[in-house]
Length: 310
Ligand SMILES: Cc1cc2nc3c(=O)[nH]c(=O)nc-3n(C[C@H](O)[C@H](O)[C@H](O)COP(=O)(O)OP(=O)(O)OC[C@H]3O[C@@H](n4cnc5c(N)ncnc54)[C@H](O)[C@@H]3O)c2cc1C
Image (cartoon, rainbow, N blue to C red):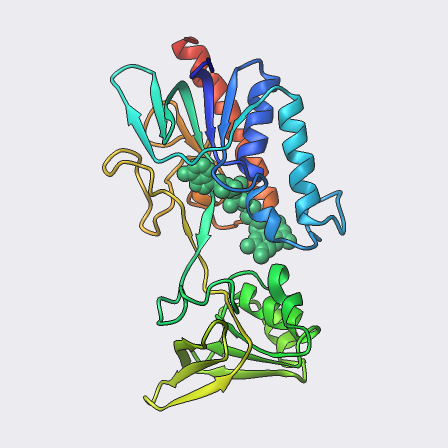
């Protein structure tokens, strides 16, 4: 029977969680990592990584595999299950709950990342994966030579529009405001693309199509509406930290829904740490996620030496 207790449990097998597990194992602690999806997390959505130092041009999935292998070879036990809840007692022990049961630990590191924000319009859910996408680099290739739309006004939307302009015939960039939130250089680069058309002060009100996206309804700020025939819409309107498994009133959350931590990745509950995109952070990148993971692991080690192991 599987041992259900570890010194450390890590929730999430993205860059933050895999780094935290590696550091904890190297410090000699037993570690169980829970991953409810694909190990590597959002790395799997990244075609080419240009800004993780020392790995120019690396593809996201291969960096995922390298991180996973390193964590496993260091002795991390990986359990491919979704964590559905947590339980905190009076003592130092904590429990993580999945569909298969309860697993206990002394130190808990939450590295569950974030999920793409939805538009919440008719057709979005029904046509997801049939022309509705949240990842241009993952799905753009399916729409080669076709007309597509991007929705959003930050750097991700601007970069998606630039990326798609190289593959697709025409890209409509729809943004609800008159100005973009993204960096000036990204705005300039996007505007310089001849096949990108900006549709500003406008929102998407419906995604239309039978078994795949055929058009989108766009509503201008003056209330007028029109249809744009497109084969796909790429939604890039930000992300929400994944914290739904945290019982209300336990771990403190910031106003934006991320987990509040101090500079050592400690939450308000002793022995509970958070790292990566799920925590309150001004930058959500691979380099910050791995750095957070290392810090959270080091803090977990300090906590374990104070309270003692099981
Ligand atoms: C399209 C795209 C391109 C990007 N390009 C770059 C780039 O070029 N350079 C860069 O630095 N950053 C890039 N990023 C950002 C980068 O990928 C993230 O900042 C980074 O992956 C965050 O790591 P993380 O470990 O915090 O979270 P994630 O990578 O999101 O991993 C979290 C993991 O936790 C798992 N999980 C969640 N909830 C549970 C649960 N309840 N139980 C079990 N498991 C759970 C998820 O399945 C996931 O695998 C990109 C992101 C996207 C979406």
